[in-house]
Image 1 (tube, rainbow, N blue to C red):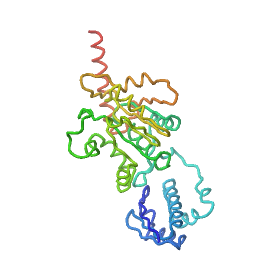
Image 2: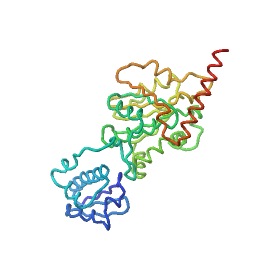
Image 3: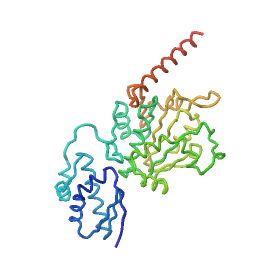
Image 4: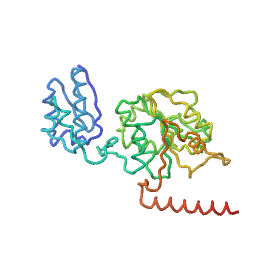
Length: 324
C-alpha cells in the first residue's frame, strides 16, 4: 500500500473538508479504495499509487473550483467528479485572472496598468526589465509570475539573485552558509514567496533546489535552463555584472530584471549597469522594458507622496546643477 502526504494549498482546509468534514466524507465516497487522514492542512492518502494520483488530480480540480467561485460543497464535488467536470467549470469569470492563489486562498492579481503589462509581456518575451520606484509591486508581480510558471510546470526551477552591494559581493567573512549570508538581502523576495507557497512546501523547494538563492557573484559560469530567474535591485549591478547575468540565459528560460534607478548604492559613483543595459538593449526583439511609476504604488497612501516629494527635490537639485 502506497502512502502520500499532500499539503493543502490555495484554500482554507476547513473550506475543503466542509462543515463537520461533510466534503471530506463525500470525497471519500468517490474513492472507496483509498483511506484518508486529515490534519489541519495535511492530508494523508493511503492506497494504490494510481488511485492516489487520480485523486490528486481531482483534488486540484476541487481547489481550482473554490478559487474561482468561493464555494465548495457536496453537490459541487459530485458534479466535479463527473466526466464533464471541465465543462462544468468552463464558466467565464468576471474581473482579472488570478496569477496564483495565496496560502489563504486569496487570489493574487496584477492590479495596476504596468503590473498588467508585465504579466502580458511575460507571455510574449523571455527577458523583461521592470523598472520603477518602491512600492509599485514590480518585484511582487515578478515573483507571482515565477511561482505560476513553476506550478504550471512551464519551468523546473526558480532562481533568485541580488547584488549584495553592502558586502561588496565578498560574502565569505559573514557567518553561515551561502543561503544564510544572502537572506538579509533577499528578505523582500522571501516575503513574497511566503505569501504564495505553503511554508512546508517552500522549505522542500529550497532543500531540493527547485527554488535557489544565488548571489550574483556566484552566477558566473552557469547556464540556466528551464528556469524563471529574477535579478532584484539590478540598479546596483555594474556593466560587467549585468552582462554576465544576462548571458546565463539557457533554453526555456525566463529572466526578469527589477530595479529602481533612483536608489543606486554602487560605491565610488560607478555607473549603474542597469541604466546602460537598458540603453543598449532597447528595441531588441524578445526583450520588454516596463517603466513603473507613481501610479503603480500600492503601499500605504503616503508612499506615493513621499516618492513624489523626493522626485521633486531631485529635479530641483538637477536644474540648479545644470545652471551652475
